[in-house]
Amino acid sequence: MHPMLNIAIRAARKAGDFIAKSVENTDNVETSQKGTNDFVTNIDQGAEQIIIDVIKKSYPEHNIVAEETGIVEGKDADYQWIIDPLDGTTNFVKGLPHFSVSIALRIKGRTEIACVYDPIRNELFSAQRGAGAQLNSRRIRVSVNKDLSGTILATGFPFKAKQHSESYVKIVSALFVDCADFRRTGSAALDLCYVAAGRVDGFFELGLKPWDMAAGELIAREAGALCTDFSGATDYMQSGNIVAAGPKVLKGILGKIRENANEAMMK
Ligand code: 2AM
Ligand code: CA
Ligand code: CA
Ligand code: CA
Image (cartoon, rainbow, N blue to C red; front, top):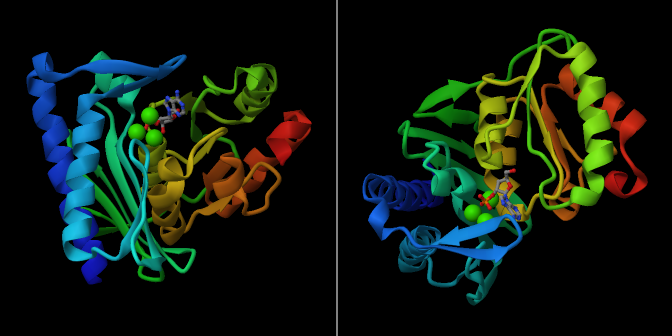
């Protein structure tokens, strides 16, 4: 295993176990609001510090971009770690046991290493570019479907970009004609991993941040998924709008998006 993947996994497990422990004793959880419908807790921050400490100890020169801390500059700009210490904070705050720790490493602008850890289920998803994707060390693959029929699609509602609600609902209605059903889990990082594992057949969401997607998208692609933005191009890290699925399902989702999205969503 790549030594940097080893460090990513060590950091994710340490942070995840810290989060899982806090679920047992919610007296220690302090929630504050960053904005409308946008929560952060001392556990998000504590988990992030654990991850940063593990990475900095092994790689003091590397750069870090973390959701709650922002940019931690190092001397070597070629290496950039992208961290979401707790993806699914709203679930966590509500006591809904579905969230994850997401860590990716980009080297010279390309994601090389990724891990997403679900501490409640003890599931560790990981990938190294060119070496496939794993769930707890076993190889995972996307589902194979000819088209949208029978598919279960994961999505996230545009709770932040509510100006897109109408177009979003149109896309969902159009997809619902052909797919079997939807899931809305609340952790984009795990949604991408579930695409990778074939637990859902596709995923789309808009308005995501790089740390929501960076690890999950490599894991999905290494498991055979294609990831695109809503126009079918690969600019999802910039736009925050992502579709992930096996090639045929992706084509079906993109078709419905193209027919129903507004102009701003297609950028
Ligand atoms: P978070 O829990 O790390 O914030 C679910 O739809 C996705 O949206 C999750 O990846 C979640 O990440 C993210 N999310 C939740 N609330 C958010 C907010 N107010 N602003 C931006 N992203 C948010
Ligand atoms: Ca957040
Ligand atoms: Ca997130
Ligand atoms: Ca987060």
